[in-house]
Image (cartoon, rainbow, N blue to C red; front, side, top):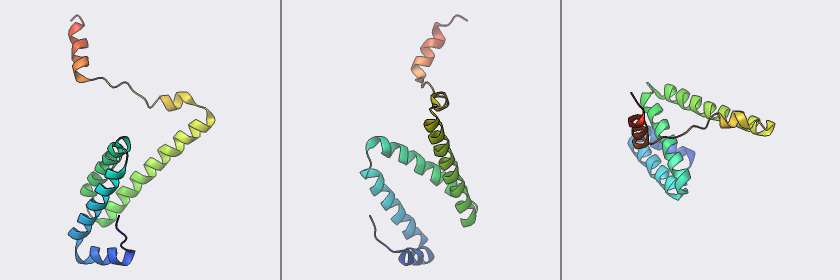
Length: 115
């Protein structure tokens, strides 16, 4: 992990944004490589969502607002789940679970149904 201070990173952002982005990607890959495989997959998915929001942003302020909204949405989901957990509301927690059906299995079931 890099130990660059804020002023160095700010100067890099002002001088060479591409270098700052390269440093960010390097740090992200280092972090994701050190995570366990299950967490790494989830973190990569989250990073994909972050990158998509960054690309959709029209300007740096829009980027900040979009990422802030993502953060708040995740925080609210976590807070809600914790409240249900503390209240012992298993039904609310299980409501977010779903059955994952592979496409091959779905096709076999569809073929067996009479038309």
